[in-house]
Length: 130
Image (cartoon, rainbow, N blue to C red; front, side, top):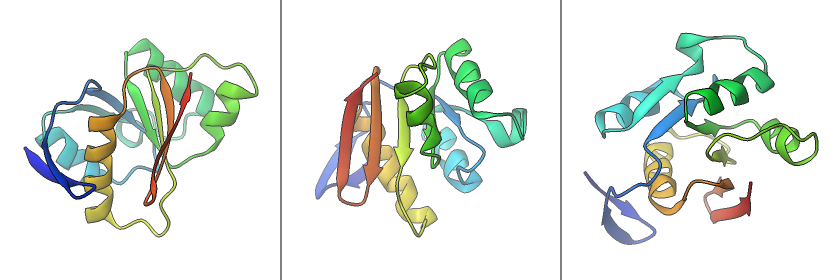
């Protein structure tokens, strides 16, 4: 799989392959990630309506990095001491354009290593160590 990433073309060599998509993450993007070879579990399908702490626990227990549009996960980890999963990828993209989100997600997965909270926007990626 090849895709455009910041003006470059790259292969998919992500270190993060197991993902947990929060309830707010679009299903078409989840399907495309699965087709691209990622192991993605969707909260909307397996545990709709669970609270944020339970989402973090499920991500940790299954060894998955979290994909979300919910800023509260950063607050839970950094301000309230919740134990983080492998990585948290927080997407700050409004409005959400599904086709663009797939490309941005693939680029982020190619750039981010485990152990980070990543804030992903159209302008780039900011990282904070978990």
